[in-house]
Length: 114
Image 1 (tube, rainbow, N blue to C red):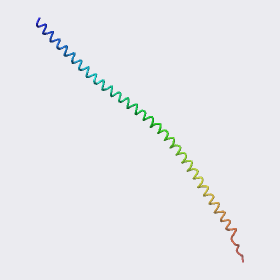
Image 2: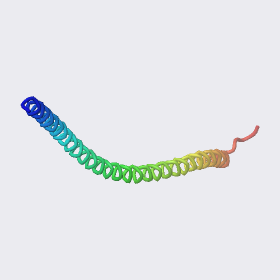
Image 3: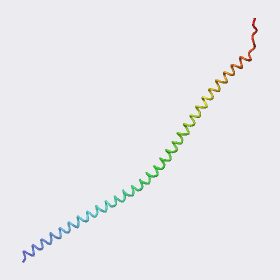
Image 4: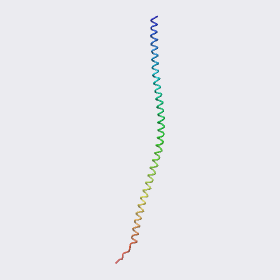
């Protein structure tokens, strides 16, 4: 019976060691799970913050693009109007010079013909 008791004691010791090893592996796995859960929470928090920043930047960008389009339209309209003013001024100057030339001819003293 002593051999059986010794064998039983050996099996018992191995079972206890196996159970302890399994518990140790489970504890390590639990530590890794906790670590990854914390990392997941941090990443989700970062994503939430970045999503909010992206939303705000997108809104601002849309507003700025609309303002730029307004500037572009205003500049184009102003340049077109200014070009018309220049053309009108040029036409007015040409007409004025022609009229001034005509008036000068009409007001010159007449020469006596011999």
